Amino acid sequence: MKGSRVKIIFIKMCFFVMIISAVVGEGIIAFAGQDEDVSSLKDEIRQLKEEIKEQSKMYQEKLQAMEKRVGILETEKSGKDELYKFATEARIAAEESEKMALEAMEEAESSADSTEMIYVSDQSPMQQLPYVTKNFEFSGYLRSGFGVNGQGGQQVFFRAPGSVAKYRLGNETETYGELTFINHFNPEPEKAHFNLQVRTALWTPEDKNDSWTTDEVKFGVRESFVQADNFPWAPEMSFWAGQRFYRRRDIHINDFYIFDMSAYGGGVEDINIPIGDTKMAVAYLGGSRDEYEFKDIGKIAKNTLDIRFYDFNVPLGKGTIWLAPSAVKGGKYTTADDDGDEMSGRYDSTAGLALGFIHDHDFANDGYNEITFQYGKGTGSDFSPNVQDPSPTLDDAWRFRFTESNVINPCDHFCMMSDVIYQLDDSGASGDSQMTWISAGMRPVVCFTDHLALAFEAGLDYVDNKPANYDGILYKFTIAPEIRISNKFMGRPVLRVYFTYATWSNGFKGMVGNPVYTDDTAGISAGVQAEAWW
Image (cartoon, rainbow, N blue to C red; front, side, top):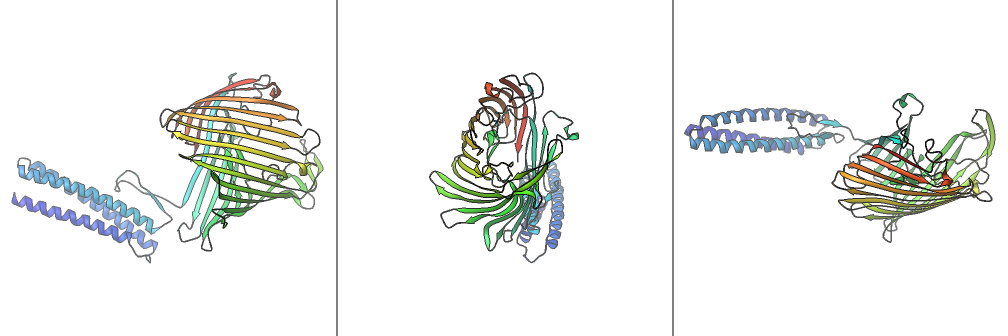
């Protein structure tokens, strides 16, 4: 019995020596000299992994031997108690050693190559194979589903003629997706950072299983730009050039982009202004259209300078001021009509200006309220870098827009988004040249649990189009049970089943829900949809 105790003490000492060796090995890896090269560190990592495997194997063999010994000495109470206590201590020590070895391996991998990231599974380090990736980000957006109309055919959407957007819950008939790829160069904190971003997009009609073989599928590149920052001489400024979604603002429930200056160009952001917390961004943005080509200068081009002052303090929040002068050089152009025959016309040289103000106020629990005012004249009247159609009155055209939108998440069982939009357009022509669009809507969501909810959406759009001589109101209502990833309003992914009912004025008859509801003033649809962003 005395010899057994000596053996037990000897085995304990072996175990504690191995544990101390693992800790010392971790210290060597974590505090390796900065002059060691990446190849040397990686060799040490591979060696450490082999040592971990050998130690684990040794642990398992010794534990099995001790457990066998416990069985032999079960009749000897003192030996049983001693060995049982020691086996428990040894097992705990082995688990701690394995945990420390895993942490050492992670830190060593990070030190060896700062452009690599290790994704560790729930398996033990003896079972897992780390997945290593470069400094790469992948994100995107998707909505897709299937729906039918009240007559049993393919779903149609309901939107007021002349309105720029529609309330989207249960009212989207297409599949749309975006995939964004970002590669980070020089991720080390002390180096200048360069980021490459490419965003692709796919659109296809709903209920078109063979649409990939037709011309109905649209695929394109929505973004392709490089951004650089963290320079010693400008540590907070960011520079970019290429094609970009430039500082967009939108209202989610009707997919309406209030500020959308997306275009090709370049600029600089986050310039510190010595007035409070104010920052400034300046960008040159260009737009063109193939159908207007001038003999002397080639295809038409619109040039816009976007200037923004933002993040300055205002009562109850933060403010943004936006200025965007623009100009188009004109001349005599040639283009083709619908039959392919060449035709000519004149596009007068035109300039314009857009300006705006944004008030942002943050609520608790990821909520917010946003108020915007915009005014534009001439080439700035569409609030975008796009080239408008030629018009002898484009110089006199103008637009005013006001919006208010908010998101609230006041408790675990309720969240909501709502909005109000007022827009007045004037084409600049003599006589009745104005069109008014007023929109208001809300989407409350009742959350029974974190993942089960019931969403409602109600929206109205009023349009008075004097040049086209029509006016009316469209109402749309949707109810949608949902399976959600969270109880926050913007929580995605979400799976939903929906039922939608819409009704509209006689003034819109023949212009809503075509071709199913051409002769009606009401319609319904139902279906299923998934929506996600990541």
